[in-house]
Image (cartoon, rainbow, N blue to C red; front, side):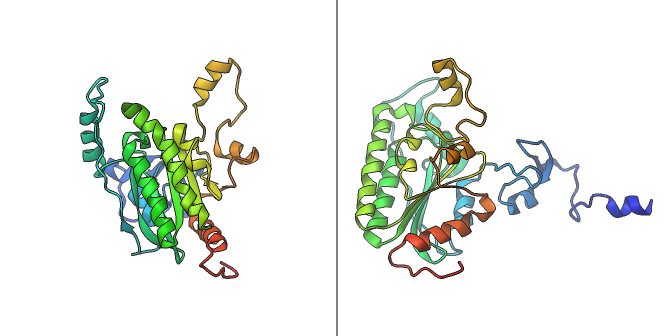
Length: 285
């Protein structure tokens, strides 16, 4: 009995497993997780290492130096086509805005990251699957232009299902706009770092997300243009194991690093200090 008590799993003090609001389950292995500890572990399962999706505001907290983030996003989307599917697009926008407290699928602003001045843009998958419409494209373009004008690095965290179908061609043109906006940054030799999270697909992958000086990806992230099911049905062949996952893309040269979220800021800081022309690189960082 003494040995049984010694090795019995300890629970966090004062935590009641009968209160469901305190607990969640890992999407991958199904283990029960105490929400407070899960959040402190940056939404990574301590058992299997699965990286769960992160709210945009908390992603900012993970990357920006404390107290330095100043939000610059906030443009409001319109419904130029009067689009209606099973419900009007305007109603969908209102519902997403109420659910997330955000105007559209992106949160961004100026900050420092490891002391390096930066513009940080984070796509919010909770808002319409992180889809890129006119507002998201404009905010990315403005972010790149601000970084170039103020001598800042540009860091974009991608999480998106692609172009927003309710805006049709207006959405697709954001691919060209975002790519062109990066020219000003490159002309001043300022670094652009892209962080691909689960999922990063469609027009986002095919535009700005794949053009960075350094491309990080989180473990297990789905990254591609069309989804594996669509590709399988089109070519009528079985796909390789792990196809379109971050590790597969690393092996085939599409990303530079697959980095555990808990180590991501440290690696991001190293990259920015190496690449930013106005920041002396400190040995040992």
